[in-house]
Length: 81
Image (tube, helix red, strand yellow):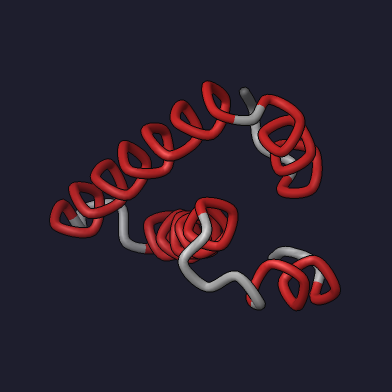
C-alpha cells in the first residue's frame, strides 16, 4: 500500500483529487490481489475496470490543472503515467 506519512498529509484534504486517487489506488491493489485468487470473478473485474477509469479521469484532470502535483502524485504512488 501507500506510505502512511503520505496518506496522513493527503487525508487532511479529504475531497482533494489526490485523496481520491490514493483511495482508488488502494482499492485497485486490493481488487488485483483478490482477482489473482478468483480468476472467474467477473463482477469484481468489472468493478476494477470502472475504478481504473475513474482514476484515469481524475489523473487527466490533475495533469491539466497542475502538472507539478500530478508528477509528485505519480512518483509517490508508483504508478504509470
